[in-house]
Image 1 (tube, one colour):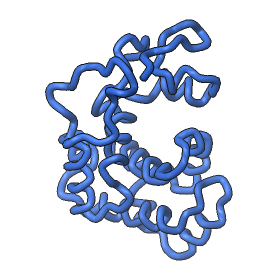
Image 2 (cartoon, rainbow, N blue to C red; image 1 turned 90 degrees about the vertical axis):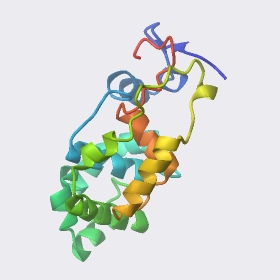
Image 3 (spheres, helix red, strand yellow; image 1 turned 180 degrees about the vertical axis):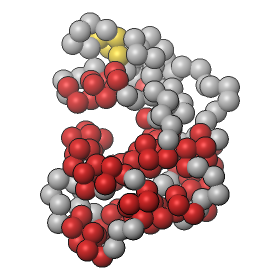
Length: 189
């Protein structure tokens, strides 16, 4: 597999972030792999990763403003109070992914956040590898699942979360800087 490639500005990037999509370029350069903390922020990311399952991440990125509006900024306390009328509103909202199971899971996951005995942020970050793993040199070295993501998914399921398997958990870990999978040589590592 390939290592870093030059983006439109000549800077080496992970191949997926160097392509023609301005959305991917900005996400790669400014957001992906940077440490993110906070219950609302991480609840949003857990939710978006779940909605992404089976779809392109680019689809989710482009719909993220609509998701934020539809899910009250991903405030877990507000989303946990959503009822049948809210579910119907969400399923009619063409700006988001209208998947009944994923909408219901997001609401259930917000309720789970409120019943946890510690913060979502603290719980998720407890699975970050320590010490951090070495930088991958190629995309072939980037795993889809790790022992940490498997343990995270199991812990989330014990808390009552849905749509959070080991692959989704690892994507969350990558996106929020719990692991840094920018390739060695990527200017944004």
